[in-house]
Amino acid sequence: MPHLLRLTGLAAALALGFSFAGSAAAKPRTPPSAPDAAQVQAQPHDSDALSPEDQRAALNAELFYEILVGEIAASEGALLDAQAMLMEAARTSNSEQLYRRATELALQSRSGDRALINARAWLEAYPESRDANRFVLQILVALNRIGDSGAYLKREIALTPAPSKPAAFLAITQLYNNAGDKALAADVVESAMEPELAKPETGAMAWATIGHMRLNADQRQAAVLALEKAQALEPDTGAGALLAMELLEAGLPEAEPVVQRYLAKTPSAQMRMAYARALLEQQRLKEARGLLDTITQETPDYPEAWALQASLQLRAGELEAARKSVDRFGALIPQLPPGVARSAAQSQHYLLQAQLAEQQGQYAKADELLSQIADASNALSVQARRAALLLRQNKPDQALALIDAVPANGPSQQRLKQLTKVQLLRDAGRVEQAYALQLQMLQQAPKDPELAYDAALLAERLGRHQEMEKLLRGIIARQPDFQHAYNALGYSFAERGIHLDEAEQLVVKALEMAPGDPFITDSLGWVKFRQGDLDAARELLEKAYAKRPDAEIAAHLGEVLWAQGQKDGARKIWRQAQAASPDNQSLRDTLKRLGVSP
Image 1 (tube, rainbow, N blue to C red):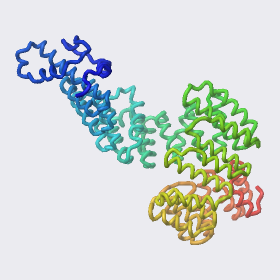
Image 2 (image 1 turned 45 degrees about the horizontal axis):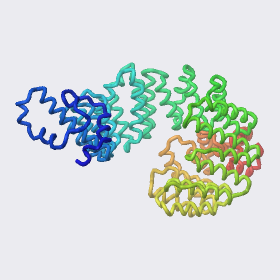
Image 3 (image 1 turned 120 degrees about the horizontal axis):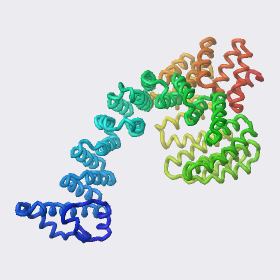
Image 4 (image 1 turned 90 degrees about the vertical axis):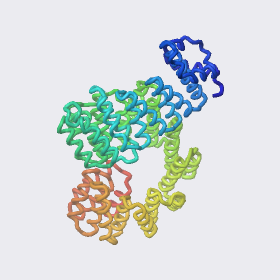
């Protein structure tokens, strides 16, 4: 082994803090020479002639040598050699610290299989060690050997002290978050949790953890069932409320009463904020604003609430109220801890100020504010916003040049740049150019369903229905579970009043893949309207609008009501939609076509 006497390596080894009994501990810092070590190893049969104290000294000298050489190898980057030497030392000495070190070195060498072997040897030597068990568990999950991890997960849960179990259960969902087979991961977690399910102190939390796993595996109804079981054991707990919030955000409204009951008893500002975001996702703007009003009144030092409130006020055109909220948000930023959180808040403050200036027609000021956002990770999104300002000033070429100037670090960033340019071209009315660019991207990744889908929508906008249909049918042939393609094709047929039977079949198929999806329900309602079944159309559209009060759904529902002679009801729906989305093109087109001023 070269460089055995390098001082820096020796210092690194001694810095580990290992303690040795006997004469080896008292040796000077100069390591033993290779011949001396060989001599120790060459005289195993002479040990009987040594006293017990001398035997211990010889053994400790040999261990010291193995550890020293191993650490020198590690310092020189020979991690696999180092872990092998330290594993030998661990077995000889039965030192848990050495088992850990050997496992860590194997991980540093990116040898997952070797790390697993070392961790299992550690656990075999120390079967009660929670650390060893945890290493084995984490390595198995990292290697995506999910099915093999169950016994170790069960042991980890059993070894976790009762007060630490809430945090441990939360960590379980994070541990398996990137599992390749999420359904298998959910099965493994539920099986490992079984001993906890009937315990009064842990049952509700355990079911909530299972619910998170089921939702992550897109087993939505199983997740709802887990929530019900958690609620039956212990109603309105924090763990159940968090799961209910995730279910609500996933579009499962049956979880909402759990969130509401929890907030009625425990008015947590954080949970209220999460609920407000969920309401916004569902376009329930009035309820979200009411909740934000409550948060800002009862917790006036909560920066995020003021930022979100300002965003909604800007959306509604309430510029003076928005200015006050933006100022209040800015005043609270210095209270945030230095680092990422404060930097992100400062960037958001600049963005809100820029939006306020833009709505006031102060485009130069808006651009100046955006230019102060220094976060490199947001470079493309900030430049896209600046480009949108240039579009407002009828400067599309400058807008596109701004995006071109953003550095692209890798294929994914280049793709985002191209998609941003497509969006800018489309917004500038250059749909033909947008379509051409989209097709270029599709040629580079012809099996990408998202790119093909977006190209189909652009073809539809250009009136190239045959091209659109070819693109959508191609997606369906390659990826039969891509429900958006079925929905888009069925809706296009309905919008043009053609192939209505096939349109219904396509949309029904999409709805089977995404039960309750409000936009697909809207498409089916529109198909029924085109088929002349106004009652069925109204029922479907009312269901869709109740779940997602979107302007396009409102346009369709209003038109059905109008056709049924309920003109006041239609105008009411349209007015609500206009207030929430004054620039929605579908709503504008509907009102213009019907000659209505709501």
